[in-house]
Image (cartoon, rainbow, N blue to C red; front, side, top):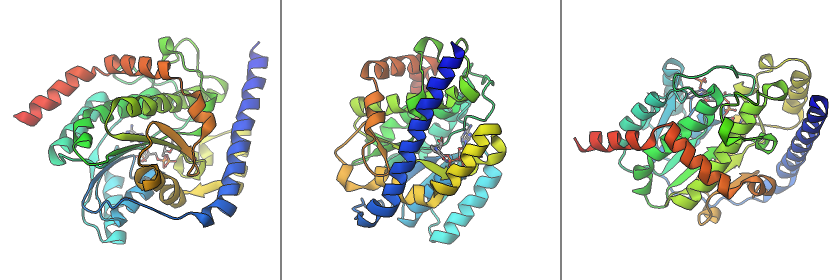
Length: 338
Ligand SMILES: NC(=O)c1ccc[n+]([C@@H]2O[C@H](COP(=O)([O-])OP(=O)(O)OC[C@H]3O[C@@H](n4cnc5c(N)ncnc54)[C@H](OP(=O)(O)O)[C@@H]3O)[C@@H](O)[C@H]2O)c1
């Protein structure tokens, strides 16, 4: 039975990867040259970026700073983060770039970060929920809140952060929430009664936690679109040459696969930020849309079709309880008033 499941998984995996590779090649060699940018002006507006000191987040923070925004980065490693802030300030000449401690694996840290940001920035134009850990990383760790580490960092932390900053987002005109997904969400097998995957296990090569958390984020984006005034956009960037794909993180077949993928079908972090993240964050042509998933600057139909509206509602309710959202919201409101 397990053999059959593994074969089915590998088949879907190859379809996901090859279709992504094909779309990437078409985008890079044909569609990209025809694109006309039509971006919103964000000079002086506040943008919050999670995981902004590395990879796609770092390049996105630079793009926002280049456009004159006030950029707040949330990340774990403040030592490296401060260097990144200085680098972005020097490269862009924009001094309004800063970093605050944010550990998405710890819901108290998320609350503290949200508390500081919401007090300092009454209005937030864009929240980029970008930070993440890949499938090779510590899949078996439980956080102090009792979550699987992937569920905590990739999904729950972002669910909580977004809700705690919602008032500030909704105080802006045309606010946007942008979420970094992965095409691997198509391989997810989410069971709401086993969200930490204690019973199901972590699947082939421990890939299920990553796939499931990216699907959770897709469901979250759809539900945000239904519930909030802020518009929500999710993007699958394809394969991007960043530390998350460091070949040392992989072994055997996956290592071989990533080596080829990075050589033939990968964007750089700068390309992913300037092409795909900026599209979801700023492009006026999609400003009336919300709750949708995009890949290479167009709707990613397969992923949008997988998003189940009922499941999205149930996940929202379950997540609210699991992170004790109401209690934390009350505390933030009280602290802001005093
Ligand atoms: N690269 C790809 O091929 C690819 C493809 C599809 C989707 N994505 C998604 O794109 C996003 C960005 O990844 P990337 O490729 O730019 O990889 P990356 O360079 O490894 O960036 C990940 C960022 O997340 C931060 N982070 C990790 N754990 C955190 C925590 N507990 N709290 C707060 N921040 C934390 C990291 O901080 P430290 O550096 O301090 O650990 C880093 O800044 C991720 O969500 C990833 O799943 C990437």
